[in-house]
Image (tube, rainbow, N blue to C red; front, side):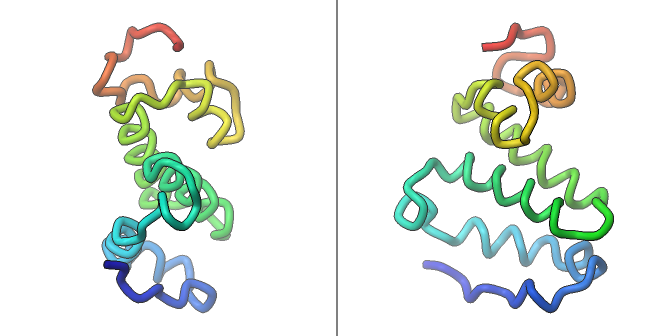
Length: 112
């Protein structure tokens, strides 16, 4: 069951930082497969990237949410190529930035 959507339009950067748990709870409550037709882990990564791009200054919270989303996507079998697409970069760049967080294949795993 989805939780009521917070009014993000009126939030400040500080709201996004201090209310990160609320944001995560809301996003995890949505039936993304039904709404968007894509895997939840890819939608979560896409939304984390979009959220970071909409705030004036990226924060540690926004960067951590992207890293968490990358980890989840890798655990679900998403390729580095797809992760790169969602991040707006190449597979090699995505791998270089986040491979050390990859719990599925390890940091030294080749690009897939």
